[in-house]
Every structure is written in C-alpha cells, then in structure tokens.
Length: 167
Image (cartoon, rainbow, N blue to C red; front, side, top):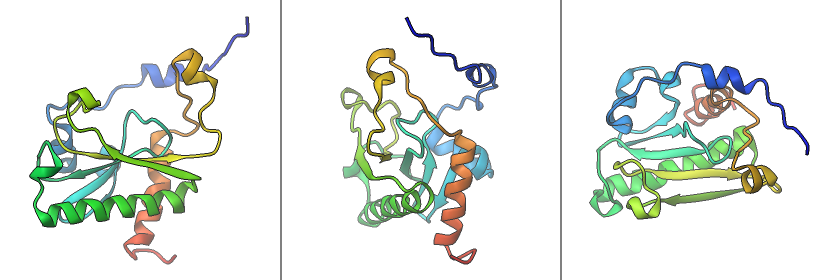
C-alpha cells in the first residue's frame, strides 16, 4: 500500500478557525475587513467572497446583501446586480487563475445541497484534469493554494477591474 504524507496539513488542522457566526452572509460583510472575510468584490447590492470550503481553488460565492432564501425573492434590480457580479467573478477568475472552464449555479433548498439559508450562487473554476483519484478513492480534495494566497490574486484582479490600479 502506498502512503500519502501531507505534513503541512497539521498546521491547517490546528489553526484557529474563523469566528463562528450565526448568519455568515449577513455578518461577514459587516466586519469591515474584507480580507479576513474573504470578500473580493462588492457592489451596492451584492458581493463576491471565496468559499471557505471550496470544491476547487478560487471557488467564489455571489451573495446579495439582502437576506433572501430564493431567487424569486430578489427585486429586478437585485437580480440584475447578482447576475452582473457573477459575470465579474468569472472575469476575476479568468484574470487571476486562468481556468479552462467554470461551473456556475445555485443550490436552492436543503434537498439541493443548500446548507445556508441565504441565497448564494457558486462560481467554480475548473481545469482540464482537475478531478484526480483523491475525491474518488480518498474522499479528499487537494487544494494547491491557500485561501489567503487565492484571495490576494483575486483582490489584485478586482482592483484592476475597478480601475484602482493600471491593467
């Protein structure tokens, strides 16, 4: 039998966890520290943040500020803004991480996998060959980059997107 050693994982396992919150998608934007909250982009009505439990590196969540459960509850303006920020998220991922493709979607309701009762969309970057034997056999995902390093790359792309730094 082959052994897989990932000694660096112990640092991750033993690291303090982000403070537990009751309503993360409402409370995290109010922290005033987008880096700590992993928020990479904001509009007036919605924001993008890195998923703390990603399917792939760079997995973004598109979230309306107003707490709603279903897409049918969004106003037309919120709906348009949320779709626009999904488009911005795709563009940021293209610039920062250069994926080969994307999965974009929503889990609506607990039976569909919705684990937080606050509407949010997923933008998951994909690379050719990114699904290896680990999820299939070991029920383990290998993420080649820390959330903090991914946030830095996306933040740089977001600042360019907003025109804060030269392209």
